[in-house]
Image (cartoon, rainbow, N blue to C red; front, side, top):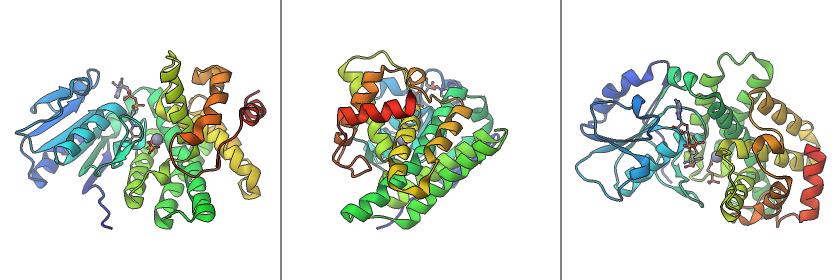
Length: 327
Ligand SMILES: NC(=O)C1=CN([C@@H]2O[C@H](COP(=O)(O)OP(=O)(O)OC[C@H]3O[C@@H](n4cnc5c(N)ncnc54)[C@H](O)[C@@H]3O)[C@@H](O)[C@H]2O)C=CC1
Ligand SMILES: O=C(CO)COP(=O)(O)O
Ligand SMILES: [Zn+2]
């Protein structure tokens, strides 16, 4: 199977200045920009634009789509490009999840595979100035790759699932590298290392042609929270990466129980999340304890993906795990 990865990836201060040069190299003359109301100020002024909240199904007369913004702006831009069979250029204005580089579209669950961006332009000066909460969310999404790879290896061992060692090693290495960086540094370069790690995660997904290297039981838990937010009409504004990082604390704890080589993994993950000020308590994440317990007990049903949750854990066992970890 052919692996499609971005043809141009620039991650540096003032990277935005390279856009016209990249468009020329790609022979793109008339792109349409998809952005959000708060991130329109970062969009190149010379091209037409549409807000992602006002997306048409079909467009004509453009030869590419450029996504400029946070996770949803990039996701909707990627989706529109895919629907119209156009190349997609990703220009994230923050680093809140690995959608900035992945071939996945997650505007609704289940997410689906499209095509990797043909170019990714990450202006680290813009990222640095973006809300710290969004960068903490991005760290949650990348640290979740550690439990995602552990789950993938478990599925390979217990169910014979297709597994790519090259994608898994890549995904695990970028995640562990930034975890160690956060635990041992003053975070001066955090935004740059985070942007590079999230791009690496998106490429690992492209290599696997699946979100497996970046989405395991911790993402199932996050999808369960999204489902319960909808079901109970909860007024909770937790971000994708925040939910996944919190889920990684729980799932690394479950993996540790079965694999003594992983001792203290959940402690290291929780300490690193706390250091970047990502939510690490139920109150900080914004949910009631009972919703967290219900999410853990239904997470395995969110998609057909074998993980450490296996056929699911009872509410009683979920309660015990949550109380051991957070009380
Ligand atoms: N395709 C993929 O692989 C994945 C895609 N996603 C997508 O990402 C979405 C979540 O993305 P998030 O970014 O967490 O939330 P979001 O996109 O809902 O919100 C991000 C917020 O940050 C603001 N923002 C962005 N850059 C900024 C800057 N430089 N300064 C000030 N404000 C800025 C935006 O205006 C927006 O209000 C999901 O709903 C899903 O659509 C999530 C995970 C994976
Ligand atoms: O969020 C993702 C990777 O970080 C995509 O995961 P899903 O395939 O579970 O939606
Ligand atoms: Zn994710």
